[in-house]
Length: 226
Image (cartoon, rainbow, N blue to C red; front, side, top):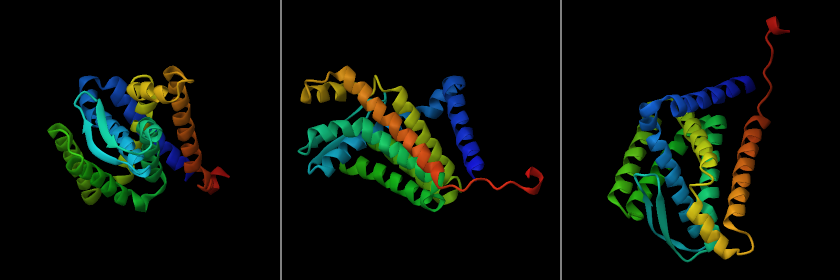
């Protein structure tokens, strides 16, 4: 079972890297919604940080160029700011873990992710592009979950792509959050926080991989292999 899962993960990784580095313009078009998904998870992380610390969310926006912003009221500013980069990494790892280890929960997770997008597009409306994109993505997830048997593969691809993108984008994506975070903790500069956050994200991914393979029984050799 371990070898089967490892081969599946390596296959999905190979597909992602092949599309990204050898897909050219077509690859960019294919990955376009994935990069916007990362932006959504980043902004949703801000929103979740606000809600969990007693604040509220006024608006959430995902832009066509991959940027985005979330308007919150109240809550812990430190948690809200960290929630974007760290929160999106947590969500990406959770999606990847469920796809890899929880076959039954994969379909439910697809529905939940679709619901998160539809909810954000309606109740945190801030731009037509954001709402249209989130609804189209939600419809695609709903269709895959209800009409196909590729829930696990799709979740693993989305989760792994998000994690890799977040790690690669560590010095660009959260730049504005890092500057604001450094203003709260003036002793530590933004450049240092950048590597602290990157370290946290890398450790989360390593721990997730270990957890995925930890309780899987080893492959039992066939008589020909003994």
